[in-house]
Image (tube, rainbow, N blue to C red; front, top):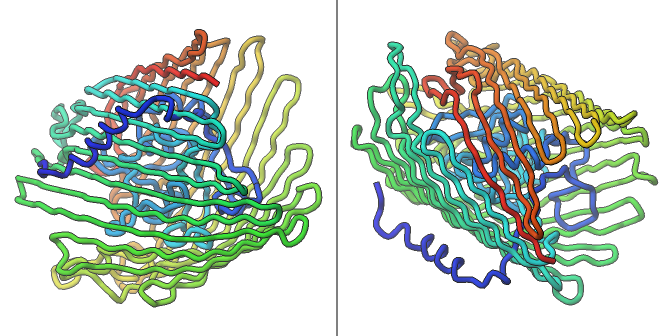
Length: 636
């Protein structure tokens, strides 16, 4: 159901960008790297050295550039994504925590919805980001509320742009899937600019079986989204840098019925406009960064079958400043302050909820002579509407030697503030809720070795999370009401192996990963709670993946298999989704002609046509394909 006037600002932005001269625009390299330690004002890199980072590469992600972020996390980072099927929301569950326990940051700014307390990964196109990193473990001491299980960092790399570049990405596939992306950019004499346009649509009318076994086509599952991102950076005299980042996006989708529903007419529209203005200065021993960010989100939901309509809007204003100073060789100090204003308006709310958050944070980083040891101690204190939340200290250690062996350890206290829906939902919200909070510990050891044309990497990791005052909506007087009732203990480990062998002009590669996650409800205020001692819902105990690839000259082919064990759908573990294993085949060929280069690719997903679900009664597509083309032009 469209709303008059809500589309015009975004269409106007598209129109303006299409009129811009191409020499004022810029493109970005197609890479995803692990963070490097650097003495800068920003805490985005180098201030949590003991945390495990996801392992991925740009070649594999090039197959997914017209897809959303959830596809990249599931296939490349080994994250269990709660995918509700075509047209529906998708969220990440990291290390046995909930969807609201993974923070999502764009250029260091949180982008979660304050009403829901999470970010919908299905409307975050991968094409918009050059830098995608998943830091596993708690990060509240640096990033605040919600960073219990991990932090997803999204950003671009304007500073690497040189000359004029154009990138075009197009893909098409099964069930009416079509996607296009265009990046134009320019960088010279300290000025860089990037404009990205993205469009994707799909019918999503794939076949599935209802509860009686009858084969049907999924109805009301169409989806369309379009977006624009414009970023500029300019170096000013005196080692100053000014950056401007704008992002406008719109998604329009039908919400298909579940297996137990005969039909569905639900419809949802998501719109947001985000902007960031930042200033950086770097001196011989000190550096500073200040940032102001504003966002406005709108969600319209309607369902003619149930006569339901809601129009919700949220706004956010964030201002922060942080500085770093070198006290001694190898010893750096950081301090910062942050203010965040949030409000919401909705026809389901009786009032106009708002929240002021103030925070102060500080960190001390030490690095040994030669760089073998690194240690960071940090802490954060935040106040929400004048009430202090738990103080969150953290300690992060990292060690490496010259033979490719390294290890990391991190321990931290973390928290998540209740969402607006938790606090203010009509006749159900609980203003007395306490923040969820607890301690996390994690450890990893990694060996990286090259010998006789072989490259090998092996990593072992372990984690232990305890979260108190876990918020659950429970029945009370015929209604559901949120309460701080649970204490959750999540523990486990993972192993990852990567091997590559050079073969003349090419190479063969093998990757394998396995994770074990035991996440249980240890205590409840409800004496009859049957979930005590049971595994949390939608947290598989076992999960793994493996891939075999071959590269020769310009050709690349890979087979990937991912699997997960039984996943419980009820908190007493009386019902579950069976385990599944799905395969995928990827093929690509690179090409180059004068100043142009690119890649042709084909993907065959769910190769063995498995019938499976990641969320109960939300069927996912069977065997399907996508073909695509990437074109890159560069002129220095």
